[in-house]
Length: 182
Image 1 (cartoon, rainbow, N blue to C red):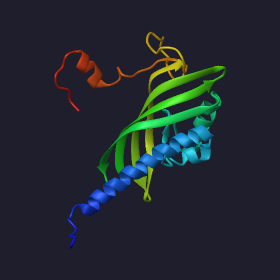
Image 2: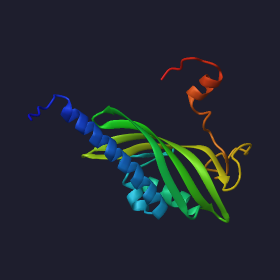
Image 3: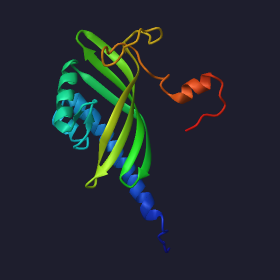
Image 4: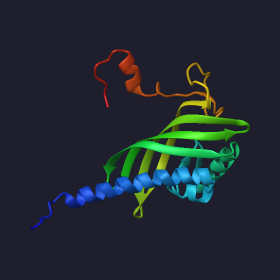
């Protein structure tokens, strides 16, 4: 049996490789957060990452993660649904769903999170350039998320979040719009 390479086979393999490397990036993020490996965590981001409105770089990101992760004890990030869109050979963006369990002092809470990511490949490795954390809700285990007061995350870990209302398509759906723009 003779096999011939089609012209786009190489591109398809490269795309699949990019998808898998980006999925591994997301998995490494969860493990680094849960294990509090801040050094590994910051190296998942580009070296000139924007941190807040006024800071930039991995040192600033290290300080941010060091402070924010000290506010909670045990964390368990479980990532699931992951949509990846390749923009070109070295840029992509994606959406990741995460269920987090968090020890916040004497509370054990669960959060439903969505990350909106931007990725960039530098020197052959994929990194985050941006990771936006959106919260559906945070609640103590055993309580309903319905009717919770706003969490205003990161102010509080417990309460309702931005999702699903932050999706333009959510509002359009409930407004009865038959078509929404992507």
